[in-house]
Length: 291
Image 1 (cartoon, rainbow, N blue to C red):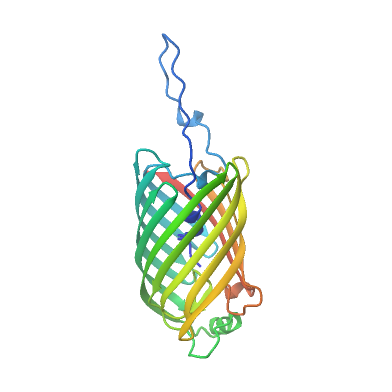
Image 2: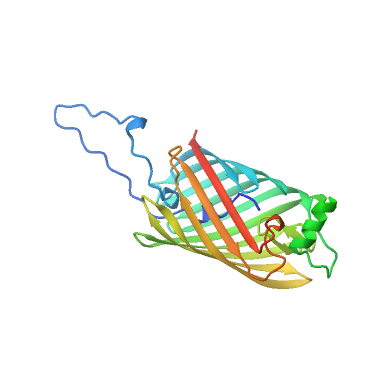
């Protein structure tokens, strides 16, 4: 797994973009000088703030997630207002149990739509690749770990994506995304991000979430993911279902606790093998700082 989570960390990026309204400061009374509030007097963001358009400026974000850490540096260039349009270049790096990664990313947002691209390199120090016709099951990967028979491989990746976010109600938020990704990985190998087996080449991914949000509680809702994968010399489709939940904890103003679970009951190849179950689990804590 990974946290680009781009989960997002992949998922947190998918859940950004609802319309927001800035508070308008009250004018000073006649004869009195307006005093700007100090940071200590400012009201903290709502618990579901991560669904709102990101604030302009240069930001550093740091994530600790299920099996690794992630850091990003991005500049949010906003046009007119934050809920209208923005261009966001970003540099990111990931270090986890199975792999390390560096990448450059560019996202352009206009109203409810986001168009983005990524390019980078990955070093997988726990590569689980199997001969043609051999199933890379969770148990088979555990056996490789036991014998320390995994290899270390390097490859490049590229990604193109389009996302749509739609606030259908004050408390209901719909997010959908389509991604085309190229992985120059070995055939019949384990993908730490999608936690499944596939060949090298192009994979297509579709994500959808319906989130029920509340400013004092956060957000939670069902999540669906469909993958079209190069596998066994052809292409196969794979559906995973689960839920996503997020909440600002409040340790600092701009933090986020994100929990995402996906499952494919009965699939012996799906999931992180150390859990011994057909589930993908992402538990991430993010802190953001404006530079």
